[in-house]
Length: 225
Image (cartoon, rainbow, N blue to C red; front, side):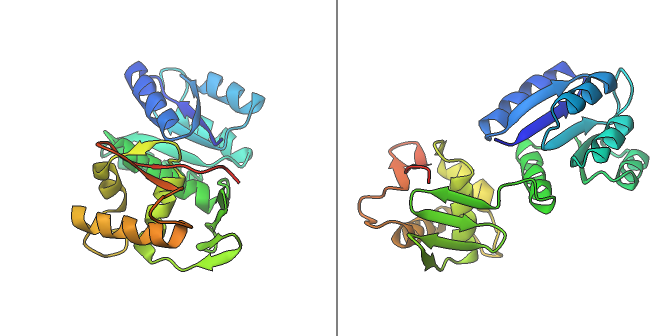
């Protein structure tokens, strides 16, 4: 499981963001100041650090510098419009920044993007007979290649990254909206789920991977490979 170190001294942000990141499948540790963050990194280097620049004890720049010495990706959390801090952070080697207030789903998207770029994320995802090589955007089932459209592939990644969770249609639309330069509405989503099932499932009439949870949405099941 991907380990995230959240360096933040606002208790409300710590609580809400920790809950949200855990729901998205991340393991989260927290530190409320520079010293605690550096000690945490030294004891157990995380896969990525989310660092608020302004801390009551110390500052985020020092945390970033220490994290980069240990090859840990850093995303800064900055006050809206604080251009100086953004430029300084990027010059220090920060991998990205998100301005407060931010949308949690945007932050998760940024986290996953940085993890992909820095090679900290697992590049091969498996589930039962399915195998997805995210570096090559290649999908196979029982060793046989599956040819997915860009939007079908994006939809599959959303399911794989949320396996076991029930995803509402609204959540799926939010995740894939215009991701492939195509207009996606509720009817289009139905079509793409049907097409994806036809390609993934040995028997699309009795889906093993993408299950319909009546009244709630869809859930990716199957056994981990």
